[in-house]
Length: 95
Image (cartoon, rainbow, N blue to C red; front, side, top):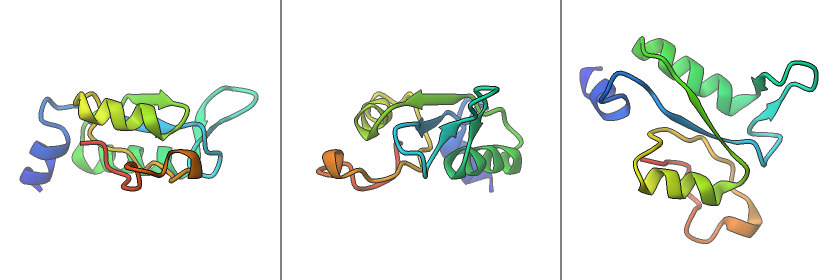
């Protein structure tokens, strides 16, 4: 578990990139604006298990998530594949 913690949260924070461009992956609650759905649940659960905070980095589409991963701004991203951006971004990691 220490190796996982070191890889995903080397500075004590899990930075999760969330794709709000795909409602199956993540969406904002209409009334409150709170993030919901699978990607948010996965990020929060992973942070809970690692016992670290998890600020969500909001993106609309996979391209920004891939760029954030390349720039090391995000360590985790359960991004949904989108037909328009699936070339070169089919994997869901942003590490």
